[in-house]
Amino acid sequence: MKSFFWRLLSYFYDVPIETVAGRDGVILHLCLSRGQYQLYTRHAIYSYGLHYANFYKIFKKIDIQSFAPDEVLVLGLGLGSIPLMLERSFHLQCAYTAVEYDEAVIYLASKYVLGSLQSSVSVMQADAYAYMQHSTGQYDLICIDIFVDDIIPPEFRSVSFLQAVRKQLSQGGILLFNWLYRDKQSRSEAQQYFDTVFRPVCPEGEMVILGLNAMMLDREGGVTHL
Image 1 (cartoon, rainbow, N blue to C red):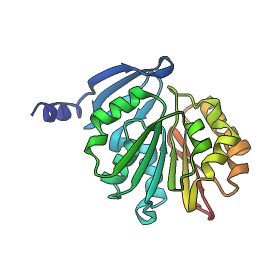
Image 2 (image 1 turned 180 degrees about the horizontal axis):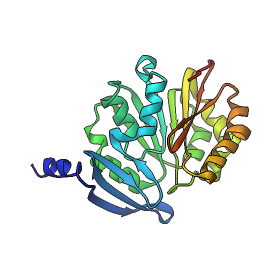
Image 3 (image 1 turned 120 degrees about the horizontal axis):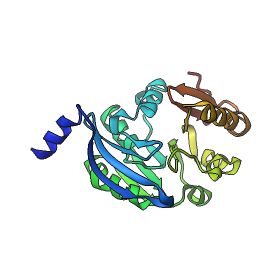
Image 4 (image 1 turned 180 degrees about the vertical axis):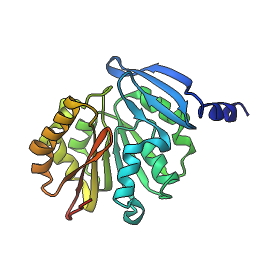
């Protein structure tokens, strides 16, 4: 009854749930907002349940239900919005490997979200750059959602990282890379990365603007024009 009350109340104003210290001095705030758990920092929203609009919009655009991936790699877990959304909003049953650097994020995701999923989610506490240099998996869908506050660290903007990720796309697999696109600086950084790194590695790649985010997309062995 108490949880129902708080969830109902969250449609009128955000209900604080828990605040913890993450890595690199980032303070993580968890609240209930419009019936969903939202994880945020001072400058960025890390995760927002079924309301994580940038991924919801791109999943709709690529018709993720028809694509129906089996093996999914998530780099940057947040609260698990991606598996939650694919299961609840798009009615897909996938096997997930989630790589997350911050053990505080894993703690919150495990406590509040992952246990409610029917899908299999294997969480790896690791640096995603190092993980991708040694991983040999093959994935139908790879989602990159890596931020420290509102910054994508330099190693995840590198050619070597993108090449390592792309090698693990299965035939016809889809790669999604989430970037901020909310002001002059972030728009310039996203465009520069797309022009100088993403497009040279992924010649048929596209950048889709989704409000305050840009999603960079590539399909292995095929072309996806949205």
